[in-house]
Length: 256
Image (tube, rainbow, N blue to C red; front, side, top):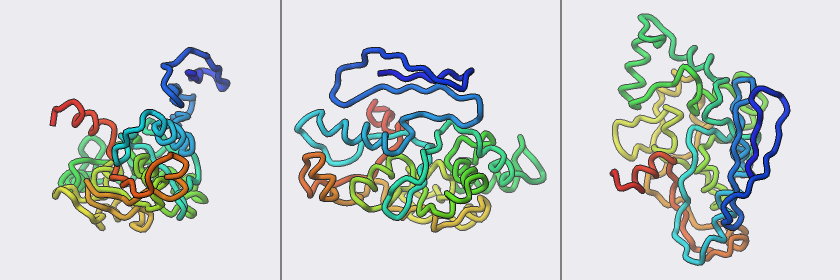
């Protein structure tokens, strides 16, 4: 089934179109609503679990350890049990834009960025918070400023692949590469396991709101007993740290 939302109307309609006949899979498409919050039904964490993990569990008997590629720049606030506190904030959501622009402002200014802040972010991360707010840091700042009740309850902010590995193992982790959209990890050295205090201070966010960092090719852990039983997998199946969609595409294409 393909679900479409009319961007010019507050109502939505559903077009039932035959999808590819793979077990427990679906294609779901959502257009932008009239406000700045891009809402994609696949962004709903519980639904993502159903599609990405449960759907794959019936695709064949041969099991390869790990978790497949996932969307990135899509933020999931979770509690101590890795349960989502709200729908994930989509990578096209621009509601964090004003807060990103605020933390990157300064004088002298280069294309809207304070020069010294721009140089620091680029030097340490190779990136900079977007003025549109579509990056994960913008999502966190949107929640902090406009959904403070969610921010206060949030144990960790996760990318989708880290949300899925947490659900699979019960261990909440991330890696340098999965945390890249939050622009608070020093990327000058491959495999960094530490958040940068200067960047956290510039961003106005607390270190304890982000997950433990493990090696980029690290093993998060074995499957939880209930998950292994539900998916029909061996309890000792290792779950490897996830990776973003574009990075996985580069590797899969043989480009790197």
